[in-house]
Length: 329
Ligand SMILES: NC(=O)c1ccc[n+]([C@@H]2O[C@H](COP(=O)([O-])OP(=O)(O)OC[C@H]3O[C@@H](n4cnc5c(N)ncnc54)[C@H](OP(=O)(O)O)[C@@H]3O)[C@@H](O)[C@H]2O)c1
Image 1 (cartoon, rainbow, N blue to C red):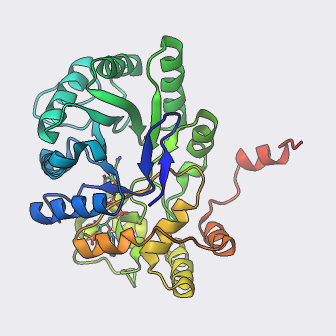
Image 2 (image 1 turned 120 degrees about the vertical axis):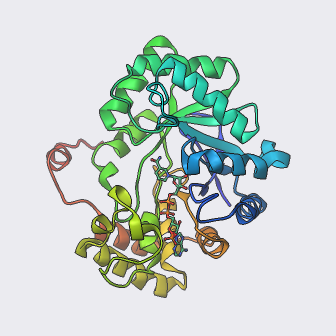
């Protein structure tokens, strides 16, 4: 396992991050704890959860799993989504963030969170209010670093500029959806992250399992993630002609290198300079084992480029126009 620096910080995280959204749902408690221990035994140190996953059960299980091994783990969680019936039970008010971190700390059974992330932009709360609350949490020692997730480029830049202006701690990471079949972040977020030294830790690096190659036709699956998923996990968004063409390129390369499509898809992300640690998921221990086989080898440059070509966004304005005027020395 290799370790990468998370954005503009001195924090080292494993090149794969274990996502725990399936804990307490698809994966029972016993297997979830086994998965965490196997991950740590194989050199993984970075674990992602959120207050809302499985109604808080994911955080509880992670907390139990790492109890004896807290110092080995870089623990990431999130705040923002609705956690109760009352009007102040979601968003980024100072009240919710402070209450949210205390609730997460209790469920995780720890006294600090390594990376506390804003889950999605909150159009109601001024970002200034959220950033002040987060900075206070760092000063209080409850949180070590902060990050954001699913932010647009302007939202990130506004937050970073305000943090700099006020000398608050700034985001060191962003957690967007990104994979061979979801490269929308190439439009603006990736270049912003390079410029501002923000570590990119993508969620759904296997496109919710689509890139494992287990779906052979456009027919909606009867079980698994896409059986009842909607939005980003909606089958109609995944099962497009373009995505099946990208999957075909993945499968061809998988045969060439003697790996599985899931391993190839993750390995492609490991080879991308902006990506610090893809947050993969697993619904059972077999999937976990397979996905951990994405490290310890590399695609050739030609194979990496072939996947890049097959999956890249179309040439479009304004990037196309900017590229024309790029200066070189
Ligand atoms: N910030 C956010 O808004 C956000 C949103 C979503 C997720 N996340 C984070 O990102 C993590 C990963 O997201 P994700 O679960 O969508 O990632 P993913 O790795 O793209 O998908 C994981 C799912 O794909 C299937 N799968 C995984 N490995 C497989 C394999 N080797 N063979 C066959 N199927 C396989 C399983 O679904 P089946 O049950 O269908 O088999 C598994 O639950 C989450 O746990 C969470 O920590 C963050």
